[in-house]
Amino acid sequence: MPRPKRQASNKKSLAPPVTVTKQRLLTRTRDLEALLAIAQTATQSLDIEKILNDTLDKSLEILGFDVGFIRVLDLAKMGMVVRAVRGLRSPEFLAGIAPVHSDRLNVTRIVFESKEPYVCADIRKNPIYKNRSMEREGVISTAAAPVMSKSRVLGIIVLGSRKHHRFAQSEINLLTAFGSQLGAALENAQLYEQVNKSKAYIENLVENAGDAIISTDMEHRILTWNRAAEVIFGYAKEEAIGQSLAILLPSGQLKELVELAEKVQIAGVLHNLEVRRKRKGNSVIDVGLAVSPIFDQDQTIAGFLHLAKDITEKKRFEKRLKELDKMKSDFVSNVSHELRTPLTAIKGSVDNMLDGIIGPLNEKQVRYLVRIKSNVDRLARLINDLLDLSRIEAGKIDLNPTYLPLLSLIQEAAESIRPIAAEKLISIETVYPDAGVKAWADRDKVIQVVTNLIGNAVKFAPAHSEVTVRFEPDGDEWVRISIADMGPGIPPGEADNVFDKFYQVAQVNRQKVRGTGLGLAICKALVEMHGGKIWVESDVGHGSSFSFTLPARQPFKLKAPSD
Ligand code: ADP
Image: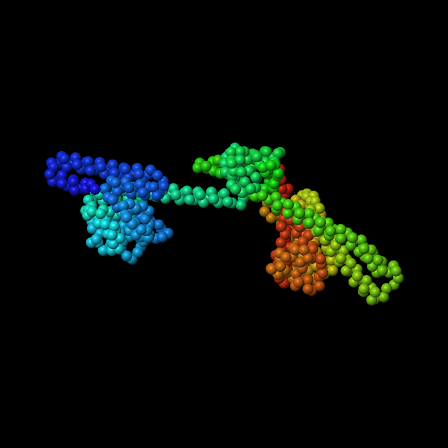
């Protein structure tokens, strides 16, 4: 083992000053060379094991020791773990974790806390080495330095000698410098390892995602293609990568990629698109699609990310549901038609009897016939409502929207209810901030909704009260019509339910009023056909206010991406 310091000091006492300077220069040059050698070794690789082993070998070679090891901080384990060892016959004693925050003083903890080297010329006399393992290996002198980066201790490097050795300051300085070189290299490699781990994690996520994840460049050439894409579209990764995404487009839809790209560039991410795509072998499937831009470092669009899900089954299911729904509506409308004919005959006969056409009636007969007439009327109303609703639900009703002046429309609806209102001495008022407000809607349907709501208000309100119909703009895009009464109100928990088919509020209907429970469901369907909303606000015991919105103007037609 070279002993540079001793040689230097020997010469210092004998040689003239010029030689001393020269010797110093030589030592300095040799130190710098050593440092360079270590720096080169440490930065040669990004493989942590290789960095640690090569650096340890080079340090032992330069400083001329025969025993050495490196411990690296493992934060999860709150200690340091040996990652490279040289020159020990049975290094197993180093296998455990050297805690950095233990109560017991040990070299690892001293170096970790002080961030300074720790040198011991004779470990046999130092109580810190009391477990004697190193001593049993014949090691007498040791020097440990922190492996540091940016003033954080990442590990320690320990060199040892089986001969008694008093460490020179220059050796300690050099070992400390080696520790710093190693620290920088280790940090780089750890970062690289972390980046690689995150990359592998994300690649794994993408690869095993349930949805097809496909990235392309700006020319729609496929760059990545995960396993779900293989399953959904039938092309293996090797077949797909490098091809144009146009391989998935059914004929006649080839323009779609260009249109999608334009839309992504304007709107950013496109969600919830439903498109048709061609599998390998030309079968066509329905696909739910989201497309987003991929940006490069300059924030310019470098390509596109397509997330696709096979929704063929879902579509098939929806189609079947629609068919079943239509069958149900057809059934209801057939049955209703069939019921209407005998009902008309019964109603005609009862009316004739009540008019005395078949002869005089006694009081009891009149009472019975009036009850029959009222129930037949109710049944006829129910059938009409059912027919209406089934036609709306089956999409059999078309809207013919025009610009409707609301004032005259509301007055017309109010007029038709006024006779019933007059019987209960209820007045119907119309209020508005602007008489000229118009809605873009179907006249007959809006009359039906307003008549129904005023009819309910009159039906449920007490005698001598007031029903108010108000209309006004609601922002730029909508108009709002509200019908308020002074009736029993609707409990908060039931406010949404009243728009369900056949729902009736027990508290409200207990008193007397018998209806079909379909009026509000029809109103809701008609309002929603226009794109509007309907809701009720209520103060139990004091009244309800039913409101709905309609478009104030003709909407723009947006072209769907697959058009
Ligand atoms: P119907 O009036 O024929 O029962 P609707 O669908 O029009 O059917 O109304 C459903 C239920 O909502 C009514 O039975 C009643 O319980 C409640 N309701 C509707 N309008 C009012 C109102 N203005 N005030 C209090 N309750 C109402």
